[in-house]
Image (tube, rainbow, N blue to C red; front, side):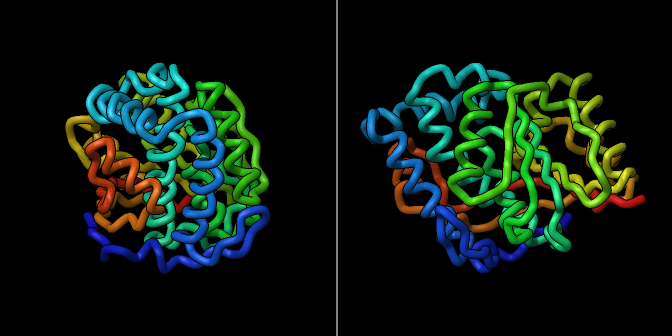
Amino acid sequence: MRQCAPACVDRARCPNVEPVTAGTVSDLLTAWNSAADARYLADLRPAEVARALRALSSAYVERRHAVPSGLDSAGKRAAFALYYAPLHFVATAHVVNGLSAAAPPPHTIVDLGCGTGAAGAAWAHAGGGTGTVIGIDRHPWAAAEARWTYRTLGLHGQARAGDATDIPRLRPGAAIVAAYLLNELAADVRRRLEDRLLDAASRGARVLVLEPIARAVTPWWTDTAARFTAAGGRADEWHFETHLPPSTALLGKAAGLNSREMKVRSLYVEGGL
């Protein structure tokens, strides 16, 4: 396992985009988050969102299977979009750049269990923003939110509600990201998705899996990592500073969460025929 140097994420360059214009990942994240703040805080007070984030965090960290069904209120959906989405963006951008996984840029990025679309969007921007992002999530709100994310960040993208384990047929040169998804799945479903991801890699797709560092929510990690490395992939651990937008950091602080640093595990198969 390799641990990367901290704080490298804010050195990754991103192109200017419309309607959001940004020079670095940090700038891009701040602009995107400002748009989300305006969208969600028009009807909710920050204190309400912080309370919802505390409740959501309990499910997200301690009871992973409760997260999708836990997005049952406007406050929790706002909390997810304003706090966890930026964290997922930062984590994906950091890992993609650390692995040089955006060179050459994927023509298509499939984001399984896309949530708000953060992971796929981060990979797309790391590759210059030229590819198409396809988000799939079982929660209709998440699919709609991902479509908003792609538009706001100036990306070509689409998202739909559906089975996140059903990988579409892809041409070589595509990429697949499954960010914080595998730990939400039952063992048999997770194994089936692993098979499909490895099959896609054997057909030429780049495959990236991101998961929390905590063994409590990923007790299966060692076995899954062994499968990916046996297929020519790699397993890494990352520890880095987040450099979140001020409003995101304040929201996390109000909810009693430490968002200054992140730890994440990754599995990556470069793909090839």
